[in-house]
Length: 474
Image (cartoon, rainbow, N blue to C red):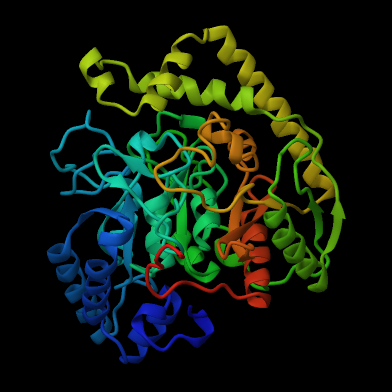
C-alpha cells in the first residue's frame, strides 16, 4: 500500500502532483496516459471498473496537451490529467448504455456538460466506468458489464452505483472520476474502496441527460485527494442551459478552502442518526476518526439531528423515478432488466400524484429542520456506510434478511432528500482489513467547509491505497 506523501511513480501521483511535474517539464501527459492504460490492461480484468475505453482518443488528447505544456500555454491545472466518466453520463463518440440491455448501443452525438467542461480544461477522457442498471442500487453489477469488484478484496463489492469510478480511483487508473449520487452513489463506493468523493450541493453541476431521479441526483468527483476534487469541481461546476436545475451563481466556492483546518468548528457526531444499525467494527474506526477531529481543535458534541428514518420519503421519490424508466418499454424489455429495478418501478407506478405532493412537502420540512440544525452545528459527522464491503454480486450483505439496498446505507439518502453537500473520506481499516468512510455533511452551499474539514482530516490521517488488486484472503 502506498501513501500519497511517498509518491515517486506515475501510479502514485495525483492530479495536483502531475500538474506540478507537467509545469516543470519533468513529465509528459503522453507518458502518463500510456502508463495508465498499461495498468488498466493489467488490472481491469480483475476489477471490471471500465465498460468502455478509448485509447486512441485519449492519446491524441494527451499529445495536444503535451504541446500546450511545452509551449507554456496549458488550459489549466487539469490539462493532460487522465479522467473517466460514469456510464450514466453522455460522452461524445462513446456509447451510453447505462448498464442496461434496453439502451441504444450507438455512440452519443454530444458531450454532457460534465464531459464538455473537462475537455475544455484539457483533461484526457480515458473511457467510461461501470454502473448498475440506470444506477438504481448501492452495488455495481449489470447484465451489460457484469460484476465490478473491490481492489481491496476481489471477493467483495466496491459499492455503487459509482462502483467502477471508485474502484478505478483506488488503483489510480486515472486521477479523477466522475460519479453520480441519487442516494449515496458517490459516498457509498468511496467508503467501501477507501477513496475520497463529494456530493456537492444540488444544482452546482449540470447534468445531461438529466437523471430520472431528478431532485435527488447530484454529480461529483471521486479521487484520492481533496485538492484533486477541488480541481475537478472548479472545471465542471458551471451553469448550463441544457439543465434547467443547474443554478447560475457568482464565484464558485471550491477554492475558498484556503485553510485546511477544523479548529473551532462546531461538529455534531451522530453514529446512528437515531435509527441506524451500525456494525461495531465500523463504529470503532469512526469513533477514532472523530477523536482525531477533536485533537485538531474541533468542538465535537454527540447529538442526533432529530429526524426519524426518512426511508419512506426517499423511496417515494426513488420509486417514482424508477417508474419513469419504464415509460415506453414493453414486456420483453422488462424481462431483460434487473429484477430489483423492475420491483422498484412497479412500486413507483402504484404511487399517486398526491403521494408525491405529500412527499415534496415532507422534503421541505426535513430540509428546514437541517437548515436550523446547521445554525448551531457547522458540520454533521456520521459513518458513511453501516458495514464494510460485502460479497460481490449481492445487493445486500445478507440477501435472506436485508431486503432493499437502502437498509445498509442509512446515512446517505437523507441528504439527497435535503440536497446538502456531503463527502466521504477514508478514515481507517476495520478488523476485516477493509476501508471505512467518514461522512461529512454541511449546510446547503457550504461545500467549501465540507472540503476544508475533509482536507484537514486527511492531512492528519493520510489515506492508504492498494497498489494492485488484492486477492481473496485464504
